[in-house]
Image 1 (tube, one colour):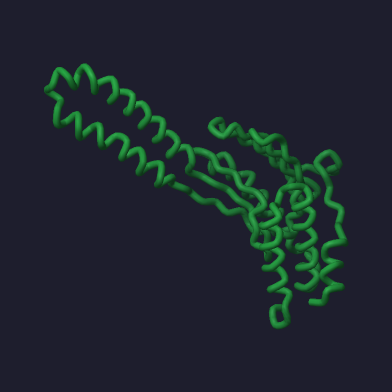
Image 2 (cartoon, helix red, strand yellow; image 1 turned 60 degrees about the vertical axis):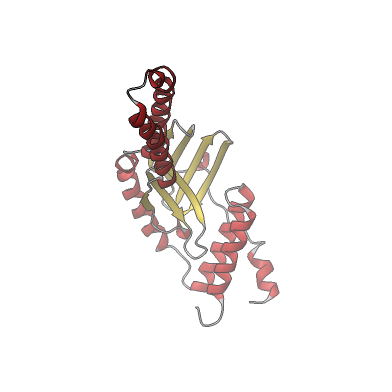
Length: 223
């Protein structure tokens, strides 16, 4: 790839509709996590786009994803093994000590309140382990960079299932509207990544990593 072509990739931006300018809405969903104090609003607009509004401790972030450059949603269940192991260690040590000296009046006076406190902490840690179990994420096609991720508790997949089915159908529809050649699509995807970087959706490091992957696909022999 020549230097001239590289400059063109980062200067030719396309227009992507914002939610307020949408002509048609195909589906929407709102998700919230109390533990992280985050609310995520997703809305399919104008056939090929996903409008995103994320509200959390860091403020409000609004952007629109062009579904022509997005893979099918990834759904994964995550068990917080570190938290789980920590919770087992938290309850195991006092339990062993209590077993050894449970007949002692001193234990009843000194260790019983402490054991109750540890048990309460253990319950909180276990609650966190259960809460962080289901994640949905969106990744770009060739840049393989994470564009959106949401982690919720049990029941997240059940709540998302109808919307994810519709989102997957619109991604298939959008993929049919891509440029005819792979080279043109790669250039368009790099422009999309640049747009998302300027909006604050992608970090500089994520953008550079995705650009390197796209340029590798654009090399001779990869077309």
